Image 1: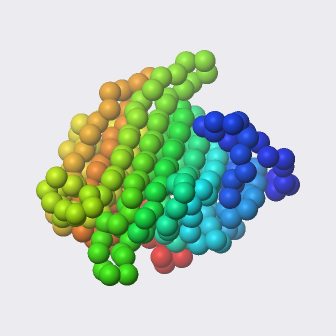
Image 2 (image 1 turned 30 degrees about the vertical axis):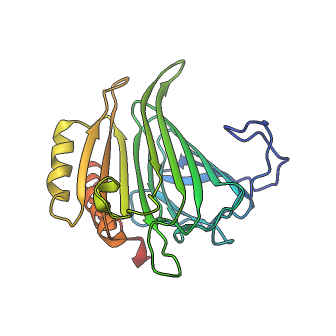
Amino acid sequence: MSTAAAAPTAVPGSATGVESPMGELQLVVAERGGRSVATHQFHRGALRVLRPHYLDDSGQVCYVLVNPGGAYLGADLYVIDVEVADGAALLLATQSATKIYRTPGSFAEQRMRLRVGEGARLEFAPDQVIAYREANYRQNTHVTVHPTSSLVMAEIITPGWSPDGAPFRYEELRLRTEVRVESGETGGLLAVDNLLIRPPLDDVTGMAFMEGFSHLGSLIVVDPRVDQALADELHEITAGYAAQTGISLTEAVMGTAGLVLRSLSNSTEELQRVAGAATALLRKSWFGQDRLDLRKY
């Protein structure tokens, strides 16, 4: 496992080609003797991962992403690069919520690149993003999967509360996720999920804004087994929660397909229950694993 420091490198998506991130993380996971292990690990600044652990006997390794600084501030840039090599399985979680504080002068930004190899699996289960008063945040995630890969990514957006108790006082959240399918020299775009949230200054609970809800949850699933029957089953098991949920399916690209499950609620916990029910179905039916409960480890 490599942990040596390196010289500053070009940051994906940067205008200048070279930037100095506040935090940078690189992680490569590969399969070795029936277990997934890190073959390359590098961190610099305010990002790192805790020691790996295994939640069951499936061989899937779990890493927990940590930001010792505790929050993103104005002009902060965080860069995350994760590769799951052929046949490996990674569960990537976070130690706590991602907090976006006031960003006077410039937005905070996270750029993440994920690559999932042939027959590999990535399960990304972060805690919620909390945007506080006067926060401006951009998140750009670029995912490359193989036609035989399995990807499950969750996201929950929660508004922070102002000192006077007023919600929705952050300025803007821009979250963009692009998923491509590649095999050798062949590839194609599977989906682009663009999310822009600009809370209104006055009517913070009107039907014109997030249907009157304050919290938003997303679950992105890419796998050759994604189809309309799965979408119908997910819709059925999530219908009983106090959240308004909808599911969109992509067209198949190179034999694989994706879906996005979007939920609106007024409760972080309720959105966590929705995502938990959906991922529990996938973990059990596809991999024979129990429901994910990181709090018990």
